[in-house]
Length: 145
Image (cartoon, rainbow, N blue to C red):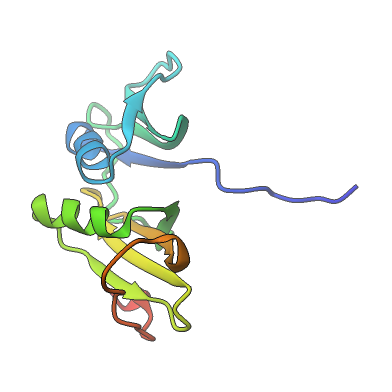
């Protein structure tokens, strides 16, 4: 029998800004706040296509310091669709973002930061996108951001 770690299930953010963070994932990325187990600490679970992919823990009433960014985790990526629609949504919400085409043209990307400084990477299969114009091909490392 083979062994595999499988696919990413979710990521967790510990935040002092729960309401703003929920609002970002709902209003900007289009996730939905949904059911969450009755833990002994406050938080929220954010769903995409019926799956809780972002877990939020509210640390505002604790002594735990808010980390200024995502620490050693550079970014979190989602396989996405609707490239033009997401760009339009980000522009309407006044969100700064970076869009690019991975060298070779098969993958388009959008990068945006959440209120906690977590970089979110949205990946789009170019062949599945209906758009008038592809983003510029970029060879630079997004890690320079």
